[in-house]
Length: 300
Image (cartoon, rainbow, N blue to C red; front, side):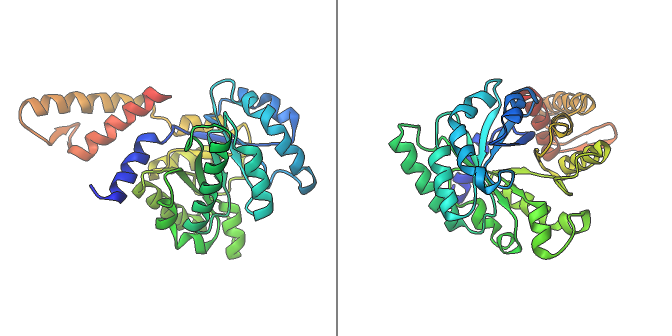
C-alpha cells in the first residue's frame, strides 16, 4: 500500500460521525448556556464571522470556560478560528486546550497554510502536555483558487478530518448568488476530494443561512445525503434535528439493508458474489452500502 493510500485508510478509520455541527457565537453567554441541549453532534464555537472585531478578545478569553460547558452532553467541541495571521495566532493560543476536538479553518487556500497551522498547534500541544494530534482540522473551501487545489488540501496533513464548501463566501467571491446552479459543481468537487482522501464531506447545495423554510432545508439535506455528504453545518438550532434525521438511515433503508446482508450471507454460502433481491441485482458495492447504513445506525 502506498503512502497516499495509507493516509486515506487511516483517516477513514478515525473520521467522526458528525451529522450536524452547530455554529454558536463564542461571545454570547445566552447562546452558550443552551448549546449543549440542542442535540447537535458537535458545537462550533465561532471566533470568526459571528464575533465583532471588538469582542474577539472576550470570546477567546471565554473559551476555557465554555469548552467544557458546551460539550457536557457528549457533543464534540470545535472552534472556528480567524484566517488573518495576527488573529489566528491569538485564536490558536486560546483554542488549543483540553476538550477541543477540532479547529474549523475558514478561507483555506492551500496545503502549505494547513501545514503551518498544524506546526503551531503541535507546538502548543507539546507545551501544554496535550496529546499531540488530538485536535483535528475541518477546512472550509471558499474561493475558486482553493477549488483548484482540493486534492493537495485534502491530503495536506493527518489532522485533516473533514471538508466543506463555504457557500456564502464562495458565491460572493465569484459575484453570484448562493443557489443550486452555482453551488452544485463546487459542492461535488469538495465531496469527491474529501471521499478520495478519506475525509468527511460536509454540506448541502444551497445557502447555509436560509433556515426559516424548514421544508426547503430538509429537502436540501436529504438531497445532500443522496449525493454522498455525511452531515452539514448548522447556523440555527432549528436545523439540527433536520440534519440529524436527514443524514441518518431511515427505518425503511435499515430494513432493506438488513435483508441485503441476510441475502448476501445466503449467497456466499452458495458460492455467489452477486444475487437478485426484489427484482434488482445486488453486487459487492450494494452490499457495502447496506453494511455502511447499518454501521451508521449503530453510531447514532
